[in-house]
Image (cartoon, rainbow, N blue to C red; front, side):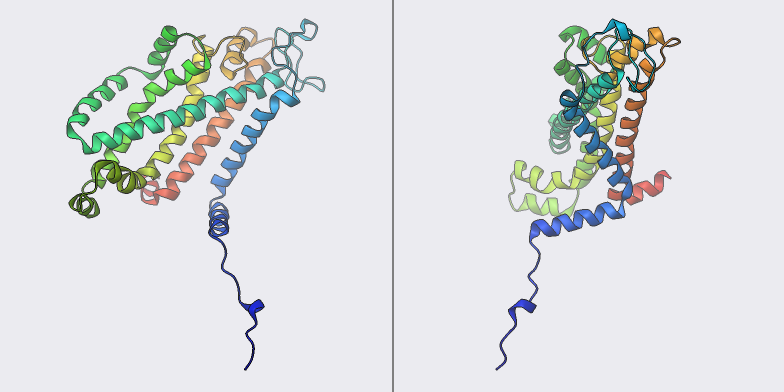
Length: 296
C-alpha cells in the first residue's frame, strides 16, 4: 500500500493571510484608492517625523527674513526668518489631526443620532428639529461663534467644526435606516424578540457603513478646509501655531513681495484635500456603482 505524501497536500491559507491577499487584490483593481492611501500614509509619516527631522518652526532668525526659495531654504523664509518648509510640514500635523478627530467625532455622533432617529419616532421628531436648527446656521458662522465663546485652541477647533457637520451625517444615516427598517429580515428579528440595541448594532448598522465611510471622507476634507478658514480669519488655532491657515494669513500681507509665504501652504492644503476627495469619490464608485452611474 502506497504511503501518502503529506508534503504534496497544500495547507489552506490562514484567515489573516486570506484577508491580506483579498485587500491587495482590491487595491490592484482600484489604483485611485491605492494612490490616495499612499499619499495619506506619506502625509502621516511626514507629520510624525517633522519634529525630529526639521528645525523648530517657531525659531526666529531676522537675518534670513523673506529669503526666496533656494538651496538654503527650499520653500523660502517668512517675515521673521522662519523656514516655510519646516512650518508647512509641521502644519500637516494640525490639518491631519483636525481632520481625523472631526471625522471620528462626527461619525460617532451622527451614526448614533441617525440610528435612534430611524427607529424611535418620538426621538426622531425631537432630534431632527434640533438638526434642522443647526443646519439653518452657516457652518463657518457657527464655528466662529463657538470659537469666540470657547477660546482659541486645537480642541475647541475640533468641537466647533464637528457640531455643524453632525446633522449631515445624522440625516444620511437616518435615511438609510428608514429604508433598512422595512426589510423582511428586520421584521423577522423583531418577531424573534431581538432587543433594540442588538437589532441596531447587529442588523442595521453594518448595512449603513458604506455611505457612512464615504461621508466620513468628505467630513475629513471639509474639516481641514474649515480649520484653515478659521485660522486665516484669526478664529482658529493660536497665531503662534504653525498651521496652514495661520501661514496664509501672515502671507497675505507680503503677497507681492514674498508670494511663497502663502503659496506653499495653500498648495499643500489643496493637494491633501483633493487627495481625500478623490479617495472618497473612488470609494463611492466601488461601494455603490449604481449611484456612480447616475452621477456621471
